[in-house]
Amino acid sequence: MFILYSIIFAENNINIKLFDCSSSSASKVTKKDVSVRDNDLQLSNVDADIIAQNDITFNALVSTEELLSQIGLAREFATDSKVEHPYVDKLKRVQMILFDLSHAISKPIPGKTEAFESKHINDLEEWIAEYANQLPPQETYIIPGGGKACSMLHSAKAICKRVERNVAFLVQDGLLNKEAQIYLNKLQNFLLTTSRIAAKCDQRTENIYIPRVEVEKNEEK
Image (cartoon, rainbow, N blue to C red; front, side):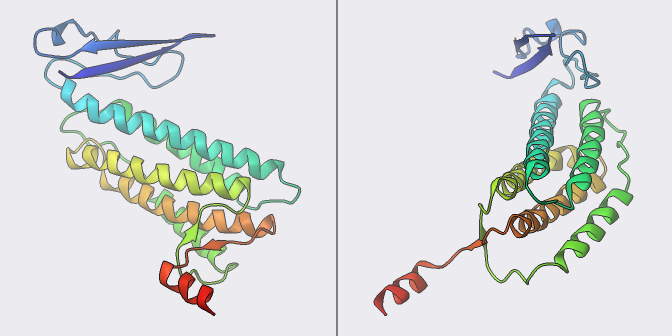
C-alpha cells in the first residue's frame, strides 16, 4: 500500500491527511487535496499516473525544508554569539536558494527539467575557498561539536546529505537538472567549512577522530 501525506498549514494548527494511494482509491486523491497551503509549495500534477513519483517528491521536499530550517537555527546561534560570525549573510542566501529549490521540487513535470542556475554552485566554491584559507588543513575526521553554531552546521551538513540522495531520484527521472544535485553536494562542503569557522570564532577546540589503535597506544605510554 502506498500512502501519500498531505500537510495543510492553518494559522494555529496543522492538519495532516493520509491518503491510501493504492489503485482502488488513487482516483480519489485530487489536486486540491494534495497541497501545502498558506505558502508557495503547492504540489501539482498529482493523479493516478504519477502518484508514485510524488513519494519521491515528498521525500525531497520535506528533507529540503528540514535543511532550510536547520540552517536557520544555525544562523540564529551564530547571530547570538558574542563575536561576529562572518558567514551569517551567506547562510541566509543559501536559505533563499533552498526555497527556490523547494518550489522546483514541489512542481515536477514529467519530461520537463526544472532549471537550476549554475551560478549558485560557483558562489559556493568561492565561499569555500575564502574560508578554507582561514583554516588549518583538515587532516582527519572532525567530530561534531565545538559550540552551538558549529554543532548546528554539522547537523545541517548531515541533513544535506539526505536531501542530495532524495533529489538524486528527481534528477534521474528528469524532473530536476543535475546542477541542483551538484549544488547540494557543494553545500555539504560549505557547511563543513563554516562549521569550522564557527568553532574558530567562538574559540572552541575542534575535536578530531582518533582511531582506537592510537588511543590504546597512548594509554599504554
